[in-house]
Image (cartoon, rainbow, N blue to C red; front, top):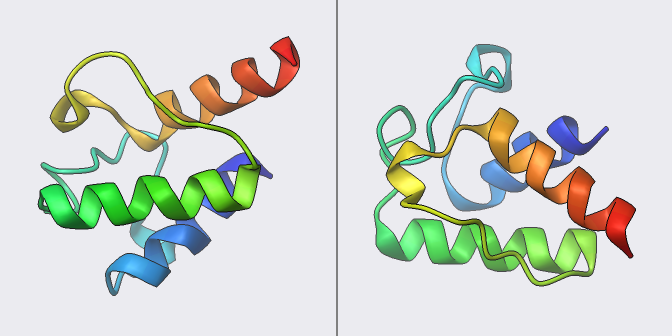
Length: 78
């Protein structure tokens, strides 16, 4: 469910083919999100999940699967 929402939110920022997105897809490297796209995407996710999203590390190296784990873990901690 989290992964599906991540993919849906991507469509609000960039035009992507959801069938080609996997948990290994990297935000910047594979999807070519620039810093503005990334900030917009994270803001969209914060609205969807009703939480502040501040993953550790460089977003270039974060996959959608890692982002899904981060969100799931943060939701469980609440």
